[in-house]
Image 1 (cartoon, rainbow, N blue to C red):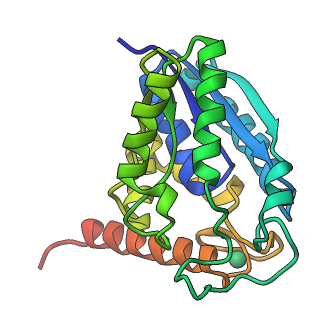
Image 2 (tube, protein in one colour):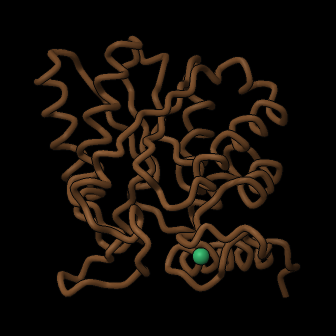
Length: 240
Ligand code: ZN
């Protein structure tokens, strides 16, 4: 019987949905993020705003929401040259991967998360990786997660469970999941407080939230929200 979870929580739509998912299931939920010289501190600010808003608007979750952890991973910036850690534009590389790809990043995240979870007496790690709707990051794949679960469990001599609630759903279904978990208030909170845009843009407000509206992350988020809204409208329309 699992009672506590550590959520990899970046302050984006996906990880916020995962945090809500964990808060509905576990009595104690802690959050973890990594600071690796992200070009935009706005991401790290967003996660604090999301945590505060969740506590204010969902009293049933407030007492479950435990410590927040921020680990310095600036070493990632030293060994990789990507548009997330340097001031270069987002683009697709010849390998077919976007230049936001940091080789092995999720493997490192999970290893550190498991070490922290071990120390905190937590045996479930929740992460918002997804194989369906992404740019094919190989370290987000289901098989990668399962292999990491086995490696970490063996290497730490303790069962580590990696939960991936978004693995097989698309962005529209991620909005739907948020609605199932926390109703319209959670959808509104995600729109208002989470941050996804690669460019760190927060001066333009769209129906789906803040962002430049042009980068790959914004396009994906907007498309998902449109699919979600259409479905809601169809459900509300009287049948002919
Ligand atoms: Zn954007």
